[in-house]
Structure formats: C-alpha cells, structure tokens
Image 1 (cartoon, rainbow, N blue to C red):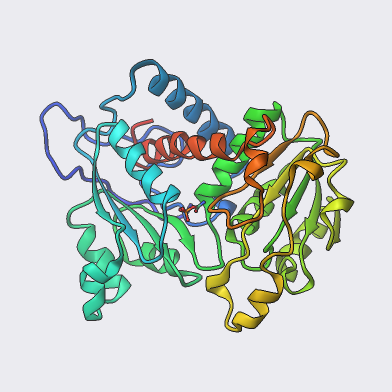
Image 2 (tube, protein in one colour):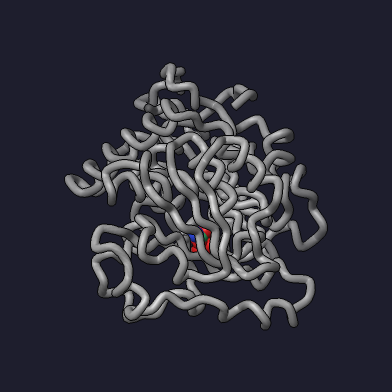
Length: 332
Ligand code: CP
C-alpha cells in the first residue's frame, strides 16, 4: 500500500470525529492486490473480522462508520461481493451509493471513462469499491481517485477481498493454515479467486495441489511464484488424485465469460462434480469451499455435509469487508 489518501466524511456531523490515523497502516489506503498483505496485516484484519462477527451476533449493528459513504461501482455482475460490501457498510452505520444493477443505468452507457466516473464518485463518497472486467482497472481507478479504491475483482486478475475471506475461513474452520494440504479444483486459468488465494498462501507452509483440465491450468507466472516460494506443489487433471489427502478442497466455476471460443468452454464446463460419493473418500476433518456462484461443480446433496463450508464462507465475507472498510476509513 503506497498511496496515502486524505479522507473526508461526506456529512460533517458534529458527533462524527474526524478520520484519524490508527497506526494499523490501512488508513486512507487502496486495496488492489493481496501482495499488500503480510502476515501481521492478515492477522490484524482477521482479528477485526472476529470482533465484527461478535458485534453483529450480539447487537446486529454499530455506528462506527456513521457519516461515511461507500460507492459500490460494478461493471460486472455480482451477488456476494456487492451485497456483502453493502451489508458491511450498513451494519457499521454508513451509507451506500449502489451502482450494482448494471452500469448501463449510469453515464458509463454514454461513454464516460472509468477515470471520470471515479473522479465523480469521489465527490460524494469516502471509499469506492470497484468490479471491472479488465485486469489493472482497479489500479487505474486508484491512480485517479483521491479516496481509497477497493478492488472487488479486475477481470481474470485479482479478487483480494475474496482471498482474505477465503483464508479467514480456512483458519476459522480448521484452526490453522500452516501444515495444510490445499487442493484447488476447476478453472485455475481464469479464476481470479484462485490467483489471489494462491498468492496469499505463499506466506504459509502449505502443500498445494492444482486440479484442472489442461487448458485451464494455473498461469505459469503464478506457478513460478509457488515454485520459487519452495512449496510442495503438484498438478493433476483428476480430483480422485487429491480427495483422500486434502484438508481443503477449493472448487471453482469454469468462467464462461472469459472464453473467446465458446466451443472450448463446452468441452471443459462439466469436467468436475463434487458428489457425496467423492466426499465419502475424503477426510472427516476437511472442508469444501467455493467462492460461488456454482454451476454444477458441487452436487446439491453435498450441502448437507457438515464439511461443506461454502455458505459459512459467504457469511465471513461480510465480516472481512466490515473490518477492511473500518481499517481504510481510519475507524479501527
Ligand atoms: N465470490 C464472488 O465474487 O461472488 P459474486 O460474483 O457473486 O460477487
């Protein structure tokens, strides 16, 4: 996190103290990539997320971010990321400008650039959450914006807040991250959640297994980072090769929207399905995760298995985003 930005609440309420620097290192900063998170920073966000969870379960909401406004700007569809950022802001007493129902209803449809759109939204909001189909778009927005920009997914690039909630879920469910065998299954080429989570896991002593069809293998640049980090790593095409030893099975959807040749998508779209029969071969203490949405990769019958963690993972997304918003807005 290199750029420090000045924060100004939209509403200058007397009972809202001015934003303050807390020493946590997040205040006024953009969140663009997982490379910004070392282990102390991860521990900090996870501790705050647990506090947020305890607060929500105890009283539902607080006014920690009263007087602050979030602009939620989504150029791609979303259910979880947009809804959890909105819920996070509202549970902390803040307000939201939701441009999440399709930018076709905004001036983007008239040809407005991303730069002008963020320079407009910063006139109203104290933080901008952006999802965009192009790699590098979040950094570009951050270069123009004077308020913090949080990357909610930039094409096939990164999805850092998803990776934070994924890592938090692993620690929360299994009590540790070091020492685990983590298998990632599905679209490892275009799946930005896989890219971000893999990069975060380089900071831990884990074994990684990558399971995909040949054309959806993990990009070489990321695989080289894994190898350089000295982790135990293997690739395979078959889930059966990893199911018995995995502590975490991280399943992903084949990203139809990233294929230029739909015939190729048809070839690979039904390559994997996690079924109760497959789960019967897995460890008793393991978890199945998925960033969702799923389109056939996990059979609905698996949902009743206590090892199916994907909806608990969804809930964790709100706590992580509450912690992040409070941190970048200086309300830690
Ligand atoms: N996991 C995730 O990014 O889901 P959405 O696309 O629904 O936001």
